[in-house]
Image (cartoon, rainbow, N blue to C red; front, side, top):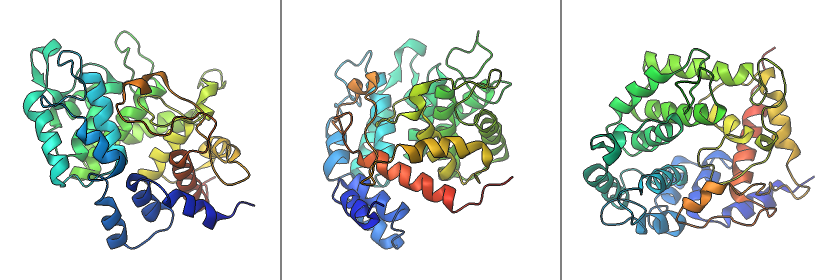
Length: 310
């Protein structure tokens, strides 16, 4: 049996962006302790490095015509690191995005109005809501684009079938909106429909054939970019306060099975789109991953603390 105290100590020997979430989600420290550590994210380590790479025109790429994808990745990653949105370093960066970036492809509309693909727009909605940008027009677009089966797809239309990748990105955006602005019937109902989409498929299986859709969904990466895997899906359900039932049991068992004898989870995958992200995180595939360990531990605690409904 792994020594949990040793795992926690290893997690705490890390960047502030990991430390504050360990203090909150694993060790359950008082709010003031968590807040003090969180305050370091924008000023030290990965968060500060990411903010420092923003260009004067607001992008995270020198190419102002095509820098929107690295910018989208960087903002979503910054949100994941979790700096205080009110920190002056953060508000300065978000103001640059709001004031200087528009979609040249779409008649110059503001960056936080989004573009056309659900997987991109979901991440823009999440970051925009978290950092206090006006994302109401983007929210309305995504609510309107929800498919009949409950999810979203970057290929719709013409596709009428949802994608796990697109759906998880939009779900995270909708949740971030409600966490920042408060719950609304339209957003809550949209999320609940999408929860059903994931749960009816047991987080990884085809509804029609029952087969696992993608074997790589049981292997975990960080940063997640726009890719779905069962750890990301379960961590979303945890953060949304969804009570687990038997439909998540298989996915939870897959997460538990990836735990190593020493109590750590490994970095299983390096997604090809991670090359767009301008800060280097954990890069050695097959090595212990603090991000995966943190997320897996809080998912297992969520599952263990809620008796699955039958």
